[in-house]
Amino acid sequence: MAQNSQNTQTQTLQQQLLINGGHTPESYIYKGGYHGGGSNNNTPLPLAEIPVVDLSQLSSPSAGEGPLNDLRLALSTWGCFQAINHSISSSFLEKMRKISEQFFSLPIEEKMRYGREVDGMEGYGNDLILSEQQILDWSDRLYFVTNPEDERRLELWPLNPPSFREDLDEYTVKIMEIIETVLIAMASSLDVEPNSFTDQVGKRPTLLTRFNFYPPCSTPHLVLGLKEHSDGSAITILLLDKQVEGLQLRKDDQWYRVPVPAIADSLLIIIGEQAEVMSNGIFKSSIHRAVTNSERQRISLVCFCCPEKDIEIKPIEGLIDEKRPRLFKSVKNYLETYFQNYQKGRRPVDGLRI
Image (cartoon, rainbow, N blue to C red; front, side, top):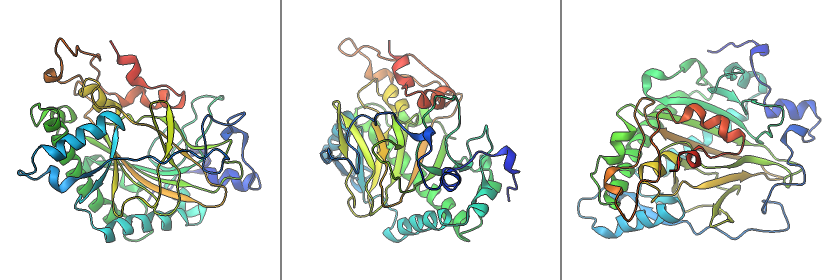
């Protein structure tokens, strides 16, 4: 078990709230508020009508063109879809939500046994501090590499709840199976070789798994739980809170609320910037953010599938022609600069455009 000394760790949001008597620390505040409506604002946003895709049909040899056309349309417009019939049972999804709640409800001292080191990503904590001007996200996180298995830092995986490690291992196996199904279907929907995306992701992709905790916030109009961004992954799989709304998506310069409860037992699958590059811009990496709530806490569980560092990410050859020329440069180790760009509000994918 990790026994990091306090002076090598960052302060969590929960600790800062205790120090500040529950008041919002200045480092989290967007002066004048952030752009667009929030969960407690007087300017409610329209609800997102996110497409629904049946994964059991995508993986069926007799599925036909309909489900693949649905997938292509979803990823080229919204950049995401609600996945149903994905093979993970309702009871197991509930178990994952439950262990999330149980961990974040532990005493702060116990959670800090798994605290993130100042310059590290993994473990319990919040934002990496890269500059004094940085506005922090209103959330605490539990963050791990869960694939490849031999790259796991198990000393940072909680022993409480008792089933946490076993449940997370099982969830990782199931998520990796879903990722392979979706990547192959993405290729089929574009009429390119089935392994076009999986070859660029590699045989040992990195799966980053993050448990998110968003405490209630007394100034939700001034604070974001997660700043505006698109993911640096190839694809992202998100298990949402069943009761508390918070996720928002941007489409055609309009923000939309993602409603809860979502379709029962669905997973939200989101295109990341690296898959946008691979698809030569046909698929759109979804721009999104999380807002806060003045009364209720919220949790979510997200898995980011990222290609192997040494594999060159580039547009698939079959998607380049005279009508659609190559739109992006090649890149390796995308995540190396992604997080610094994220904190500065920049999208690395924009710097790759030709």
